Amino acid sequence: DTEVTQTPKHLVMGMTNKKSLKCEQHMGHRAMYWYKQKAKKPPELMFVYSYEKLSINESVPSRFSPECPNSSLLNLHLHALQPEDSALYLCASSQRGFGTMNTGELFFGEGSRLTVL
Amino acid sequence: ILNVEQSPQSLHVQEGDSTNFTCSFPSSNFYALHWYRWETAKSPEALFVMTLNGDEKKKGRISATLNTKEGYSYLYIKGSQPEDSATYLCAFATSSNAGGTSYGKLTFGQGTILTVHP
Image 1 (cartoon, rainbow over the protein chains, first blue to last red):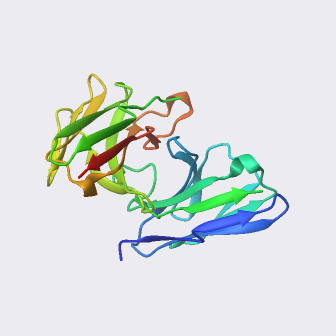
Image 2: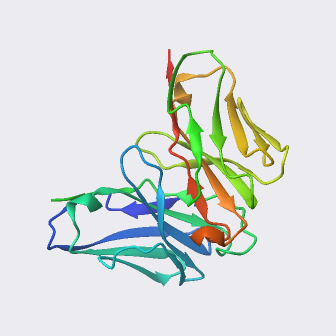
């Protein structure tokens, strides 16, 4: 299984809603990532988990709350989002832990397209 | 803030044409350069991870070269096919923690959108 699975594929939410994005991989990868991509812009790193611990938070607003319940799962909890948070949210994983001599490729999911009304 | 620039932004070619595009990145504190292919409605897929100056990698009709001293990488596609139509992203990883970045963190370019017409 070489897949990273993201659910849901599409999500529409109001500014007062609470929702979650989920990401799953069963490749035994030790690092997992959340990226945000807005139209015609490069993917921007939000969070990195390495060995189930938060390694990087790229000064992301607290209305985005990541969670790594185990080595295979990564969640992104969403609360009180703004319309400008509408974007494609990509999850990725890599074999080795982040910050080690890790030149390994990222394995991406297909993304969750989020629309905030 | 690291700058990773890709050119051109978009490219239209005919089936059978060969094409190439460029990724420019900072020439200092180089760690790795990644290339990804991203087809519409699919997930980005790694093509190459390059770490050594002068490195040249090949996968089928696609190849890439790396010049870390001058800070650029070229991606070549020989005999383009319609199925090569995709966005090609490069991403640079620095070996330095300077400038607020983190060792090994990837900074992506904006991508080159390739359309191959039958």
